[in-house]
Image 1: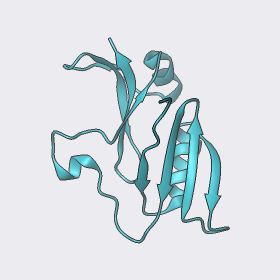
Image 2: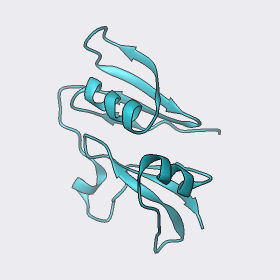
Image 3: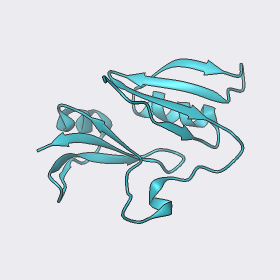
Image 4: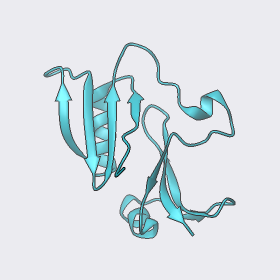
Amino acid sequence: MDAVSPFFIVRDVDEALAFYRDVLGFEVTFTSGGADPFFAIVRRDGAQFLLKSVGVDPLPNRERHADARWDAFVHVADPDALAEELSAQVTDTDDGLRGFELADRDGYVLFFGRTR
Protein backbone atom coordinates (compact mmCIF):
# COMPACT_ATOMS: atom_id res chain seq x y z
CA MET A 1 0.00 0.00 0.00
CA ASP A 2 1.22 3.47 -0.81
CA ALA A 3 -1.12 5.88 0.96
CA VAL A 4 -4.28 6.39 2.94
CA SER A 5 -6.67 9.34 2.67
CA PRO A 6 -8.50 10.47 5.81
CA PHE A 7 -12.13 11.43 5.18
CA PHE A 8 -13.22 14.39 7.33
CA ILE A 9 -16.75 15.65 7.80
CA VAL A 10 -16.53 19.45 7.72
CA ARG A 11 -19.00 22.26 8.43
CA ASP A 12 -18.27 24.15 5.21
CA VAL A 13 -16.19 22.82 2.32
CA ASP A 14 -15.14 26.29 1.09
CA GLU A 15 -13.81 27.20 4.55
CA ALA A 16 -12.02 23.85 4.87
CA LEU A 17 -10.48 24.34 1.42
CA ALA A 18 -9.23 27.79 2.41
CA PHE A 19 -7.31 26.26 5.33
CA TYR A 20 -5.83 23.28 3.49
CA ARG A 21 -4.99 25.30 0.36
CA ASP A 22 -4.01 28.72 1.74
CA VAL A 23 -2.49 27.77 5.10
CA LEU A 24 -1.04 24.30 4.49
CA GLY A 25 -0.24 24.60 0.79
CA PHE A 26 -2.38 21.70 -0.44
CA GLU A 27 -3.64 21.62 -4.02
CA VAL A 28 -7.38 21.26 -4.58
CA THR A 29 -7.59 18.27 -6.94
CA PHE A 30 -11.36 17.76 -7.02
CA THR A 31 -14.60 19.45 -5.97
CA SER A 32 -18.21 18.40 -6.39
CA GLY A 33 -21.23 20.64 -6.09
CA GLY A 34 -20.36 23.56 -8.36
CA ALA A 35 -20.16 27.03 -6.82
CA ASP A 36 -21.20 25.67 -3.40
CA PRO A 37 -19.15 22.46 -3.11
CA PHE A 38 -20.17 19.71 -0.69
CA PHE A 39 -17.16 17.44 -1.37
CA ALA A 40 -13.50 18.06 -2.15
CA ILE A 41 -10.12 16.37 -2.31
CA VAL A 42 -6.87 18.14 -1.42
CA ARG A 43 -3.36 16.81 -1.97
CA ARG A 44 0.20 17.76 -1.13
CA ASP A 45 3.03 15.39 -1.97
CA GLY A 46 1.80 11.99 -0.76
CA ALA A 47 -0.80 13.32 1.67
CA GLN A 48 -4.43 13.57 0.62
CA PHE A 49 -7.60 14.48 2.53
CA LEU A 50 -11.22 14.05 1.55
CA LEU A 51 -13.53 16.75 2.89
CA LYS A 52 -17.32 16.53 2.90
CA SER A 53 -20.18 18.56 4.32
CA VAL A 54 -23.15 16.36 5.21
CA GLY A 55 -25.16 18.65 7.50
CA VAL A 56 -23.77 17.41 10.83
CA ASP A 57 -21.05 18.87 13.03
CA PRO A 58 -17.54 17.43 12.79
CA LEU A 59 -16.45 15.22 15.69
CA PRO A 60 -12.65 15.24 16.07
CA ASN A 61 -11.11 12.39 18.06
CA ARG A 62 -10.12 14.58 21.02
CA GLU A 63 -13.79 15.44 21.56
CA ARG A 64 -14.48 11.73 22.02
CA HIS A 65 -11.56 11.05 24.35
CA ALA A 66 -8.75 13.25 25.66
CA ASP A 67 -6.12 10.59 24.92
CA ALA A 68 -7.07 10.52 21.22
CA ARG A 69 -5.44 13.84 20.35
CA TRP A 70 -4.78 13.42 16.64
CA ASP A 71 -7.12 12.76 13.75
CA ALA A 72 -4.37 12.15 11.20
CA PHE A 73 -0.65 11.41 11.28
CA VAL A 74 1.10 12.75 8.19
CA HIS A 75 4.56 11.30 7.73
CA VAL A 76 7.07 14.02 6.88
CA ALA A 77 10.73 13.22 6.27
CA ASP A 78 11.84 16.67 7.48
CA PRO A 79 9.32 18.06 9.99
CA ASP A 80 11.66 20.91 10.91
CA ALA A 81 11.64 22.30 7.36
CA LEU A 82 7.86 22.02 7.04
CA ALA A 83 7.37 23.60 10.47
CA GLU A 84 9.50 26.53 9.39
CA GLU A 85 7.42 26.94 6.24
CA LEU A 86 4.17 26.84 8.24
CA SER A 87 5.48 28.85 11.24
CA ALA A 88 4.90 25.92 13.58
CA GLN A 89 6.90 24.71 16.58
CA VAL A 90 8.54 21.27 16.33
CA THR A 91 8.67 19.09 19.44
CA ASP A 92 9.86 15.62 20.39
CA THR A 93 6.97 13.64 21.84
CA ASP A 94 7.12 11.22 24.76
CA ASP A 95 6.36 8.34 22.40
CA GLY A 96 9.42 8.80 20.17
CA LEU A 97 8.12 11.11 17.45
CA ARG A 98 9.41 14.43 16.17
CA GLY A 99 7.01 16.86 14.58
CA PHE A 100 4.22 19.32 15.19
CA GLU A 101 0.47 19.45 15.28
CA LEU A 102 -2.00 21.87 13.77
CA ALA A 103 -5.77 22.02 14.14
CA ASP A 104 -7.89 22.79 11.09
CA ARG A 105 -10.99 24.99 11.13
CA ASP A 106 -13.21 22.06 12.14
CA GLY A 107 -11.01 21.05 15.05
CA TYR A 108 -9.30 18.06 13.42
CA VAL A 109 -5.74 17.81 14.70
CA LEU A 110 -3.09 16.84 12.18
CA PHE A 111 0.35 15.70 13.32
CA PHE A 112 3.14 16.22 10.79
CA GLY A 113 6.22 14.25 11.73
CA ARG A 114 8.32 11.12 11.84
CA THR A 115 9.97 8.78 14.30
CA ARG A 116 13.09 10.17 15.96
